Every structure is written in C-alpha cells, then in structure tokens.
Image (cartoon, rainbow, N blue to C red; front, side, top):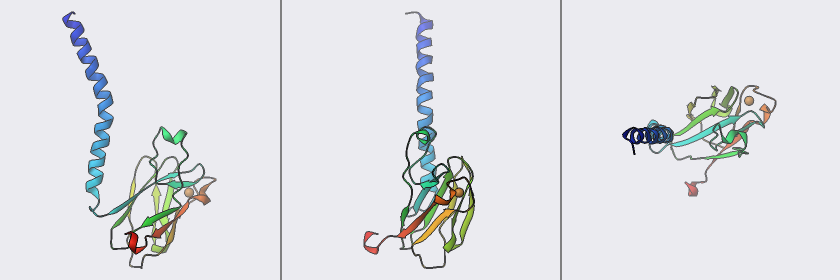
Length: 157
Ligand SMILES: [Cu+2]
C-alpha cells in the first residue's frame, strides 16, 4: 500500500471518529455542568413545552423525536415536601411559551426555544398540590398547557 493511501485512510478514520465523538463529548460536558449547577440533593424537574396539542412534557424532546414521538403530558409531577430544594428547567420546542405557578407567585417566565429557563420553587407558603401552566396565549392548544404539582406522601420520600 502506498504511503499516501495510509495517510488518507488514517485521516478519514480521524474525521469519522471526531464526527461521531464530538456530539458524545458535548453531551457528557453538558451533563457534567448540569450535575454541578444545582445542589446535590435538589429535585430538578425538566419540562419541554410543545405548542401542538398544548402540553408540557418531562420526556426529553430533540430535533429528531419531535417529529414522530407522542410525548407524555406532564399532568402530575410529584414533588418532595421535606425541605429538598426544587428546581425547574424549562424550555420550548417551538414558540415562546410562558411558565407560572400562580399559587406561589412564581413567574410568569418567558420560555424560549433553544434555551433553558431555570426557576427555583421558593415559597414561604406551605407546599400543597397546585397547578402550573402556560401563562400567555401561545397557540390554539394553549389552554391545555397545564399540569399539577403533587406533594409526595411522606412514606414515599
Ligand atoms: Cu401557552
């Protein structure tokens, strides 16, 4: 085999490997920073807003599965009531949504596609089951964009 061919093959393998590895490395780095961002014991709830059908989902939405997957509506999100810090990470998969938990006067926060809005559930009030919703008209299914935060029974904590 000619020397040029070997170099060519080597470079080809290098390019293919970096194309495959780069996204994996980025995902790893992302996870690493995410894990350090919030207190270790925190409950972190990630929500994706979808205008079509009007739903918040906890299932990760990306540019591939957005087109074919039926995402499970986040109807009831269990939250802990033992002093655990609770954070929401919320993003949109399409239009600008708006997130609020009216009872605790949290939000409304603009939820923009392509970025995560981070919100801490901080309140002086006692935690009770309550609703969260999209605060401003985003699309025709807007009214369905709501769900509930449900306090976990003590024995399940
Ligand atoms: Cu909306």
